[in-house]
Length: 448
Image 1 (cartoon, helix red, strand yellow):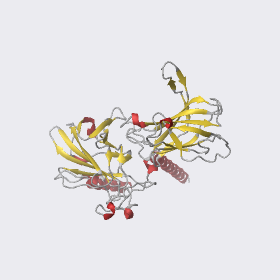
Image 2 (cartoon, rainbow, N blue to C red; image 1 turned 90 degrees about the vertical axis):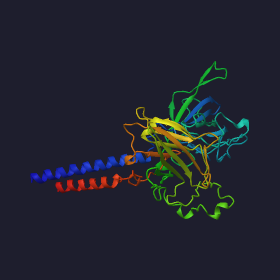
Image 3 (cartoon, helix red, strand yellow; image 1 turned 180 degrees about the vertical axis):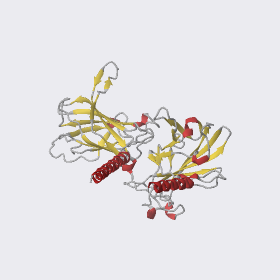
Image 4 (tube, one colour; image 1 turned 120 degrees about the vertical axis):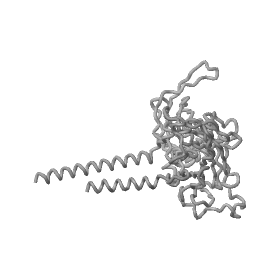
């Protein structure tokens, strides 16, 4: 009887431990899937700063500034879309440097009609070239927001908004709620607005300071929320092996397989074939991987003290030009880059003790625009790196990147066992798996 009791207790403890382990795994998976943590850019976010610069008879005037602190993820055309919910019955009397997409029902106002009466306004940037009296500092770029690492000046967007039927003091004003950000598609999640230390403004003669009432909203990006499939893939090749490791089949999903177009199709000469759709639906070239973007990494030359890699980015989307494109790569030898020939390059050091990540991007007015699919739809460069004699090797895929990101989205890498390997040596992946399986079976046999 006592043995049965102990056995039941042991069974309950084991079941409880299993439940805790499963719960921990679920929490871990949820955090890293839906959460917006990027290990190569752990502090990257878009911060929206809301500065109340003056008070009016029924509300206030605020300067709203959007700062993109992401090192290699930008917002391209058709640009950002910002939304929120008012806490009370506020209206927008006027805007400078931006506009709402809808006015809403303003029928109760006679004479002076607000710019927007919606409870949940949606704001977009103005296009370049608007009249001077509609412009605000850092506005009017069509919603395009550069990444902080590529162009700190271009990573800021701002507008001014005059709010009515709101509080007229620090105590009566209410913070907007439920902020949303599209950039231009989904992927961003915004936290609540928080009161932060006041922004200090200087008068034009810089002799007088004024303090604003300041709120901050932080928005972070999750690739999992943006798309259920990757948007790019990586292929590999080397000078020492004729094998070319191509992108995995259906690396980006094959949902567009039936709507793709062959590279020699006569339809490509049809007028308007390259015109983007309002919903940004791609028109992809028919490939086995069905990715809009392919990044090819070719180990080109081996010198005594250096080695050389060729990097090529190819666009397979007939409806998309990529402006301000970025390519982030993680590789241990990026800590000793000697020369990059046709791209601009910036090392990324999110962790001070590790220097293994870098960002490539196009040279301004030369190759910062990646054209749509076709004969001009590619950009390429070569990278010269100095060897570290203690770590450098061509064995076991060391010469290939660990992670590759295009425009901030991680690309699908081929499986390691398919990497090109050195002549007269077998790929280690299969034998390692076989050894592990045999060892595991042996341990289970002893336990049983």
